[in-house]
Amino acid sequence: MSLLLLVDTATDIARVALLTKDQVLAFRENSDSRQHATFVQPAIEALCVETSIQLAQLEGVVVVNGPGSYTGLRVGLSSAKGICFALQIPLYTLNTLQIMAAASIRNWKSLGNEITPETLFCPMIDARRMEVFTALYNANLQPTIPPQALILNDPEGKIFTERKNIIYSGNGSAKLISLLPEGTFCFPECIYLLEDLSFLAYKTFITGYSTDIAYSEPIYIKDFHNTSLVKQHGANI
Image 1: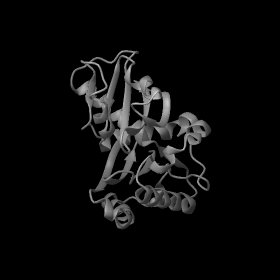
Image 2: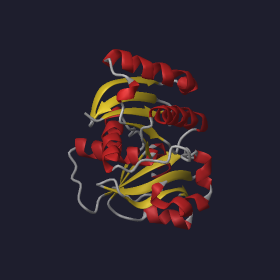
Image 3: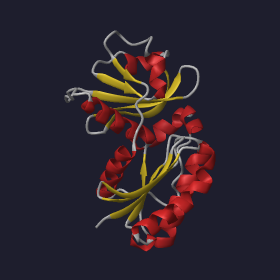
């Protein structure tokens, strides 16, 4: 049994869960972002008590490492790294935008819509003014345009607003409504759920591509204003 610990403190809702494959054995959630720092460790302990599972049984820890809030990401990654260091187990990271894309795919399917090889999914996180943090994913959650900061009404933004077959989602996509042609699908209220996280957590685990525990860093929202970050990390951001 592949037993994983999932930690997500990237958004207003913090989650910790114990997973086996894509099945959630137990989880805890906290919707007050001010309490993320005091929530994570007691929640992990409570999961172990509830399931009679010891941390020593874990085969890995999966953490959402951004983009997201500065404090939240530090809390999640430091907790995940500490457990991995202590137990000598691998650390796996998830990108917030990719999880949002997974939620968008689930939402699109739930509405009875067809997904073709040409269908693309564009999650957007609101930044400031006309800025968003975004990427473009295909139906297999592979990035066709890697995560980056974008000003929607700049020439570079046309790549995202003029292509066809794009499904937009996330709070940043609300800024697009006036820029998109009629008939384009935009779901600003689509948010990711624990099922989206657990699906991607196990998918990441079975690839075997773990993260360097010592040098892994969160992707803070402020970093996305540095275009050299995108050039340096490319699709791995």
